[in-house]
Length: 374
Image (tube, rainbow, N blue to C red; front, side):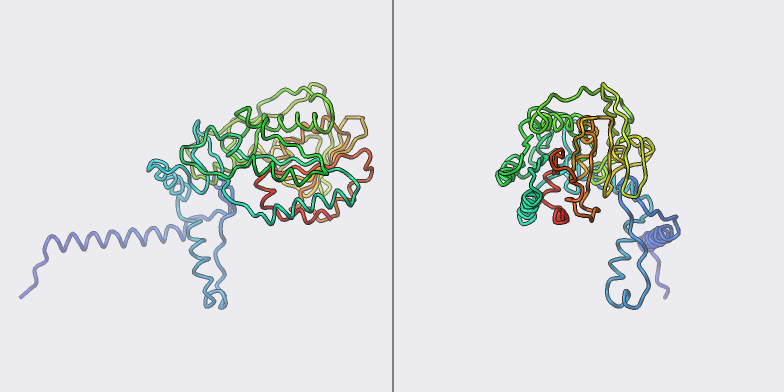
């Protein structure tokens, strides 16, 4: 007797067939779709397809590498990343990928851990370098937006006490000129980008004013601000997946007295500006300032006071240096992540040279490259 095919069986077979066809179609689409090497929204390089070597396949690494490649190149990846972030936010989550959904549309990087060993080492490196070169270092550790914009943090957020950490670090620079700006940062708001972890032109102005008071013993030069973009979407935008967030403005700092400059990069490239307009067409528009990360940049200004600044820094200084350019004839700007020459060789006239170590707190607590001062 023939077995009767019921409607339930047909429905089950149809459902299974549709599911199989969908999975097969999506897999085929992912394999055949054009592949990008870089994600603009996430601002990172995407994984390469793993090599089909015997060691890779039988050594157990191929599966993990293939999984990373498949995830990075999943069709309509940006939409899925944004959907995941939206679901988390709408379900009550206050963060995604350690970025808080702050008030007023702010995306604020969490700061919840650090290495005490790295902090101690970095303090030791700066103190020893200053002693060996018979100079006093001007040290500025900049708090992050989780401190400076804490009034915008969501209820239930947790961050380390950055003010206390910066004060404790300062106590170990007793032979240096330690510039503590935490109170100045806390007394104002809107000093950080909404979609990026850096401080903005207003925050950098606070740092500039503190340097004028503590190092230069003068009033800051007057600056005006010229908007150059209204579509900046920075690192916290990329990390959070909150791609529905609107872009924000970038500004050029224009001195009241014109100050033509000559900027020479480590590879010999020369520019007549500290601002790079072509980078405003990129996703990472923060590279408008100083063209982003370089091992070394020499900035000669129109200031005739004969003073030089040697600045060891992270990227927070990129938006600060146009202010400092008003105060020196020459600035020698070093990023120790890439620079591998002794910094002491840049100090050719110690009497007329101010040495700076300017880092964000997060970088100072994690960057091991200060060991490359020598």
